[in-house]
Length: 278
Ligand SMILES: [Zn+2]
Image (cartoon, rainbow, N blue to C red; front, top):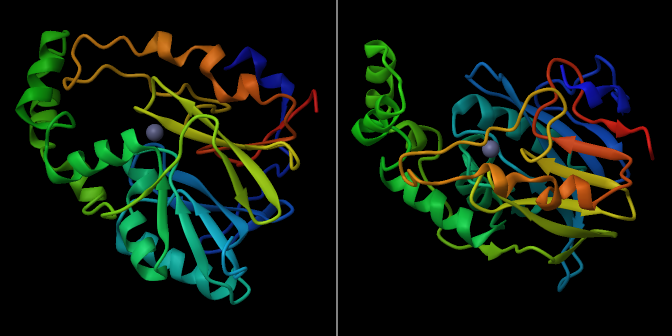
């Protein structure tokens, strides 16, 4: 248990958005969940009311996508039919390159003729990973883990056989993107959102902070009940990601006070937490 958890409130308690439905957590910010076939069995995703800067066309921005499978596509179609008030999706924002975040970005951007917004590092890492097996399974990953003490032959074999693990959840990445960087300011609908780059979990994770709404969409950089995964992988065997993931570079530390923190997961019950200092 995180000793600091007592500072957090879970304002929705046990209330969860049903599959294909959303809950408003702040004006123009809606929360939805998609199922995942992992121990961590869901991902929180976000819809932000948006307006095209050039045409003035009203619509929505999606933040993160879910993995590429039929169940997630069906859930999105239900969201489109029931939750968008007849408005289109204008852009697809992805916090980072992990499959549960970028998996359906290709389908979503094609479906709506919308642009993918992501950091350049994660765009390129996702493109590479979806086209090869390097670094996310296969012989090299198995040998790397064995060299660090993984001795169970069954476990090593499992890693070796995961040669298409990433591509099975991210079969395609959009061919074009719009870059988000540390310090960028995005105008999304009625609100400005500051981009904060974070490292250690993904190559260049972007969290979004709206000062006017006091909302932080933290992605995987800030989680309420479990630790963010900070891993060394065989692609960068001498990597030391933990110092990269220090509080100073942590988006949350620079965004206080916040009223709502919208993480990628929040255990069994709520998707949004409220800092008690707010
Ligand atoms: Zn992640």
